[in-house]
Length: 161
Image (cartoon, rainbow, N blue to C red):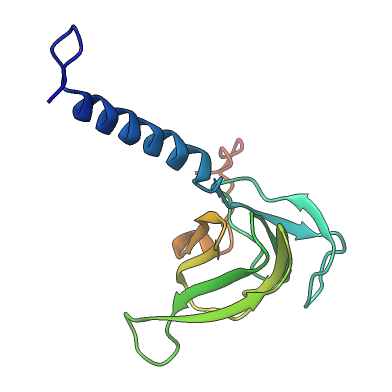
């Protein structure tokens, strides 16, 4: 076996160069994968059963409207997306059901959701695409769904006991 002046066999140097070249090529060939971005919006027109035009953005952590439709918009890489809405089961307390739709649009899509008459509980909209890392948006309705109760306290006026 021939050796260079440093004492490393030629075959090992060739192997190291080939492995290095393979790693560099793998980095160049790996697809660019970015996360899905998902956001909920109120409808441009209030009081609608269906929503086709986004209005005001619903802040993260805030609940969507429970008495009208709202819009969920996702941006992603790819030619199609798969949307899954997970929600409390109507027929089996404690279990979850889901609805799945596939949308064949490039880079972004939206769906409208109307939770009017929906049960209290946990809701999750998950969006996946072949070219992106999935993301989801979550809401939990319960005690927060109840109408706010206002209470006023007045000090007694003179002459009242």
